[in-house]
Length: 230
Image (cartoon, rainbow, N blue to C red; front, side, top):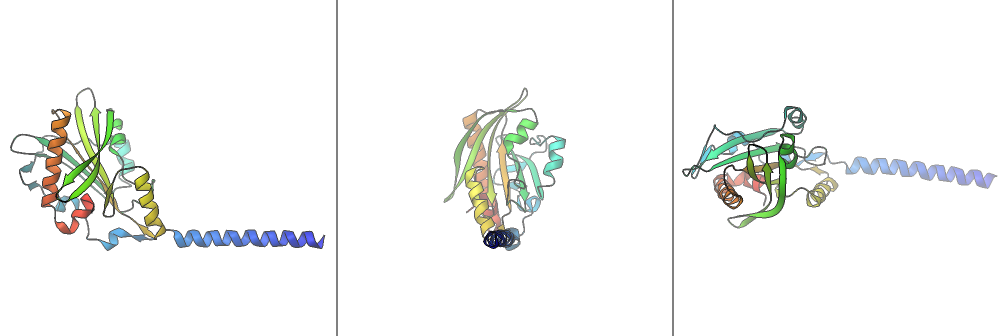
């Protein structure tokens, strides 16, 4: 009997030790430092120019925004939002939407993907194709979507960032979030989205790529990697 009591006491001690160790490890590994504190401050309204290259703001066309109930939830996740339409001298219009969040360290806090935003507004997503945006000495992974409603046919390009890395939603982002978490850091990040109307798919994506290349060239190099990655 004393031997059984000793074994029980030993098991209870081991269990208590494991609980304490797990608690301490969880506390130690919990990310506490925001990468946004290490970088130049972002101000979408000020840093994204209202005119650059052949592009100027056009107030006649508003980018698709989430439904009000969805927007109320998203306001808790985003620190800044930018939604503008630009037009060039040929009359091509590109809608630009950027959502920025200081805390992009988990699925619960990450930015809202366009697939969900458009569906909440009554669109159907016809297809999604991974692609790449080729810039001057730099490549950004992008998703190409086609959003369709009764009144709009809208080719869409988007990517997300974590800190200074541009990537697509999915396992790559989850692994990057995990890497930051294990280092005790919480990455900030954004979703950058462009779209066009009244053009075929090929022309739409070519216009969007030209617009993004011009934006890349005119952004301050000190903060460019926060929008386009390194």
